Each structure stands twice: as structure tokens, then as C-alpha cells.
Length: 237
Image (cartoon, rainbow, N blue to C red):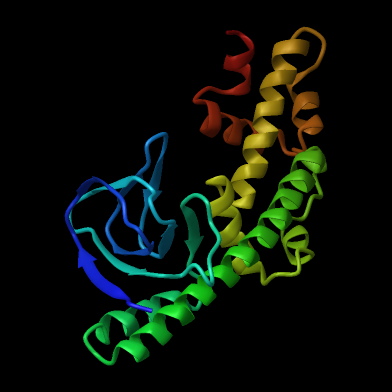
């Protein structure tokens, strides 16, 4: 398999390749642009681009990407660009570094390294699909039990089967929020709903309790942090 490896730090216009391209973002931020959508890019992210896929990249200052092109049809069967995040041990980053440092060495050795990276990404893609199911389950459990003042986020995460710190990090990548932030947002959104519907029949302390808060002062502080106004001010709007 003929493999080409290079490094890019400038934005590029729309183009395509007749082979697979593995793009690794090692530094900086930007956007990977397709005809109908764009994907935010940041360090530790891989994008697998199938042959004949029109794409472009827009980088911020000091961005750096490493690309690896080759015939990976015996490994990949993607019909559209696929995003894969490196694992906590940065195994993918390590393989990319080896590939880049050996880009001018024996072609067969370079090809074996590239194949190892492709297999790693494929395995990680399958793992991410499994994690996605787990994360959706965590979101459901928090959403269905937000009213419980004794809800234990750590216990929910531990029951996922993954290390707690790892699944916390994956949850934030999945939702854009930490599990605690997601719980707070869910509770405060429901509090706003209850105030809107029952402002004349339910006391604010009752609403706080229905949203999982036994301490009204704490509830009021969190409410204001989230909405910009106190529960009492929100009620009078």
C-alpha cells in the first residue's frame, strides 16, 4: 500500500482525494468543512475521509494537522467522514507521531504503521458506538430522576461499567456539559416550567422541592446563576 504523510498548518479550499485520508488534529482549532455541514476541530480529534469526498479546512492561528493518505479499503467501509476521538492513553497520537517520524523510511514499515493506526481507529469507532449507548442511558437516568434530592451522579456513572473519570469526560464531549451541570440545567428548566404554569398555586419552596432541592437558598442561588434572575424575580416577569 502506498502511503503519503504530511503536515498542514494553513487553511485549504475544497478538494478531494481518490483514496482514504486520515486527518489528525495535533494543535489549534478550526472547522472541517463539508458541502452541507462543518465539524469543529481541536487537538486529539481524528477525521477519516472516504475517497472522493469534497472537503475543506479552516484553521485558526497556530493550528497543525497531520494527514495520512492511503488505500485503506481493506479496513474501512465508511460512506461519509467519520470522527474518532483519541483514547485517554493517547494511543492514536502515539501512532501518528511514529508514522510522521518514519514517513521517509522503508515503505513497507510505513504501511504497517498506517495499517495499525487504521485498525486502532476502526476499533475506537466501534467502542465509541458502545459508549454512545451508555451515555444516552446516563442522560435518561438523570433526566428521569432529577427530582430526587438524593440522586447520586457518581453511582450512576460507576454503573456504566467504565472508569468514573473516563465516563465523566466522555459525557462532557457528548453533551457539552458535566453530569452535574446537566442535572442542574434539567432541574432549573423544570423549575421555570413549574413557575410559568403554577405561579399562583405553588410556593417557590414547593417548586424547589419538586426539582430536587431541599435547601431553598441553594436552589435560589443556582436558579439565578442559570437564568440571571432569582426565582422570585422570574415569577414576577
